[in-house]
Image (cartoon, rainbow, N blue to C red; front, side):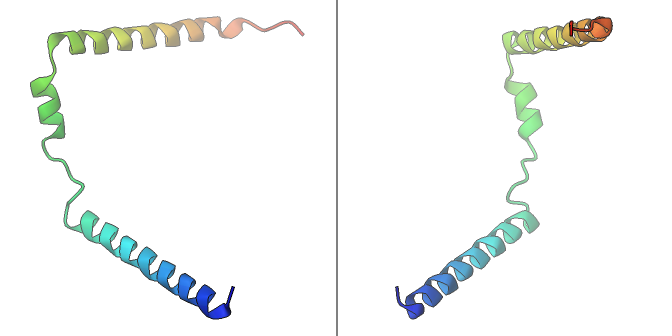
Length: 78
């Protein structure tokens, strides 16, 4: 490849990368990624079955943690 082509490709990719970075920074600064109603909508539209499933999974996680804590004395054979 010609040196001019490589220089052009590096220049264009650097420009596009800088443009993408500026767009990301603008979006963060202007609040484009903030979702103010995310948690409110989640509680508003969750049904009872989903809430029961979440509670059951949390209970299982706690039981697993408790069992793991109790089984700390177990040492595998050498």
